[in-house]
Length: 358
Image 1 (cartoon, rainbow, N blue to C red):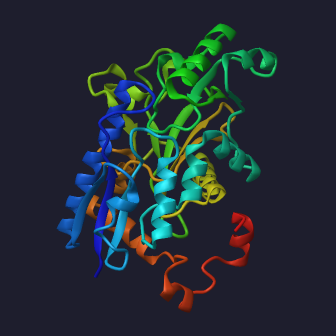
Image 2 (image 1 turned 45 degrees about the vertical axis):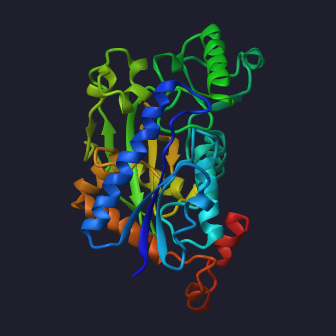
Image 3 (image 1 turned 60 degrees about the horizontal axis):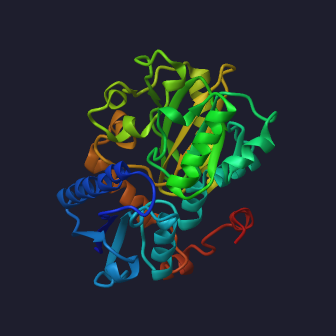
């Protein structure tokens, strides 16, 4: 049996963003260690391999004929779209690897492109605008209603999301767009703020299976506009947000809403072309309509993260979850897999080729 490389990024600095964003980057290291321990305990031959430079030279000692990759790589120093490039490189080098391919990851990282794909598939998502400079706000006056939430267009892990992300006036919107453009060196996604319940939906497999629904409990926040999953809520263990944003899993929802949420998550998975495992985040508006705000193709697999919480609720141990994700990847047909080409051709059906634009 082939060995398993647990591939992850290790950075000492970031080329953009705030200094505290390194907390999320370093969280990948702890996740990789947990994944490696789980695989080792399950009897796999494991190599923990940090990336300090490019993925090609990092993996040179681990040929794809002898190693599969448990891909936790998100790129170095916070550079844009490194996560997608890693997946593209792994595919080009002939590795079997966990999670989504580069195309799906790129769609998921770029929030505006995510919304374009969701809308094309008729998956409901909040109204949005993409602004490259504060001066562009004036051009949109009259198109939107406050409150709005402003995010960097191509970040994950809630980077750039804090109390000031929700804005209530033109001046606040201009200031927040300026912050995102200056600090994160990218356009700002401006989105209608949905004052409603927020759910995380974990999916995995082929076809995808929806794991138990999870809901963020914002009851400790009196201000409805503070009820967001901020960077502090995810990463700053001493913060009020971190200690007062528990997750309820399984979520307490009636059967009709549960079905709406689950089917919306499945449509979002399909719209972006997810593979292996993913998490879909959504808010439910006052009319009971789920609205997708983000699709995370390779979500955090740490023992204290949401994906494992859902898997655990479904009856899986941490080792069960990790090994199942690996085995999902090993069952996938790959373009460079000679066995797949010989026995399971075509790798994609005609419908998939047309839909994916291949």
